[in-house]
Every structure is written in structure tokens, then in C-alpha cells.
Amino acid sequence: MRSVTILAGRGKDGRPEPFDSISLKRGELYTIVGNTGSGKSRFIKDIEQLACGDSITGRRVLLDGAPIPLTERQSTSAHLVAHLGQNMRFVLDASVEEFLQLHAHCRDRMAAPAEVLALANEITPEPVNLRQGLNQLSGGQSRALMIADIALICDSPIVLIDEIENAGIDKERALGLLQKSDKLVLVVTHDPHTALMARRR
Image (cartoon, rainbow, N blue to C red):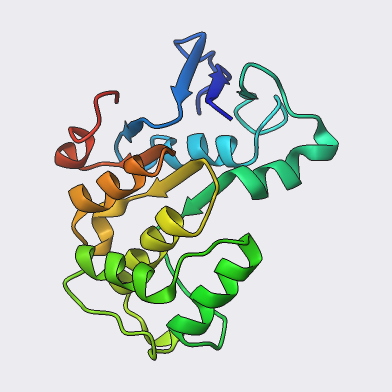
């Protein structure tokens, strides 16, 4: 997967959106800026679901210029898209180390838990350790851990992040790490400073 194209649908008022299409490329950082309730989260939801005119917006999402058949959309999305939402809550009763080992095994990746942890601790002011339980992590620690996990273990080429400024982490460092891993990174924000980190907004 090298590109994602979003074909225009309808806005909240039911009117056609004022663009024909938007193309996003792998290896680039993009931000979506807007006030609360402006439809930012719905935009990334359409991408995550690989919408084909069947969402509330009527948008269509193409991968490398082609739509994904309905029968393949769920599996394709699960493989290609990593979505880091605003609220991070782990329900798995495991330590940080156990989680990272399990995820690396599922993805057939060689990243060591200590390597992922070191990366996470570069972007959070609250250090995380391998023996901590996942459900004991703060919101910022959880976000930092998942960003490091996405950068080193997760092989999904599309990363969608909702409101990274709410996490209390080093945003610039975090986004730089994801961009270096050759992923298409799309960040939803209402913060002008975060928005300016991307060349395209």
C-alpha cells in the first residue's frame, strides 16, 4: 500500500463536500484541524472502515487507486490500519512485557520488549517499566507505549491518531518516530501547534 485516496461525500449539513478527492501518501505526516464537532473523527473513521459510499458521509476510500471489495474490507482494515483513539484503556490482564511479547509473536516481528519500552520512555515524562500491569498505566504512558509499539512492532502502514495533544507526551518526537517507520500518519487535532508539524493540513 502506497497511497490512500478519499473521494468526497457529504458534510454534516447534507451538502456535497467542497473537494473532489484527497490523496495521502505513505511516509508522510498529515494533520486534520478543526473545532470540536466539525467531523474530524468521522473522517478518520471512514478511512479506518475503508468506506465505500456506505457510511453516513457517503465518502469512498481507495487504496492505491482501487476500492476494496466488501468481503475483504474488515480483514484489510485490520491488517493495514492502526488507530490510536483519544481514550486508551487496556482490558488485558498482563504486564507490559507480556503484552509486547504477545504482540510481537502475533505479528511475527523480532522487536524486543526492552527496545519498545526504551522508545516509549523517550516520549513520556512518566517512565514505564516492563513489570507494570497494563491496567495500571496512565493515559500518557499508554499512549507512549502504543506509539512505540506501532513504530517497532505493528506493520500496519496507515496510522490514525485522534487528539495526540491530550496524552501529555512529546508530540514532535512521537510523530517523528512514526514518520521514520515509513507509515502514512494522519493526526486529528484542534491544536494549531500540532497542526503545523505537518506539511499538509
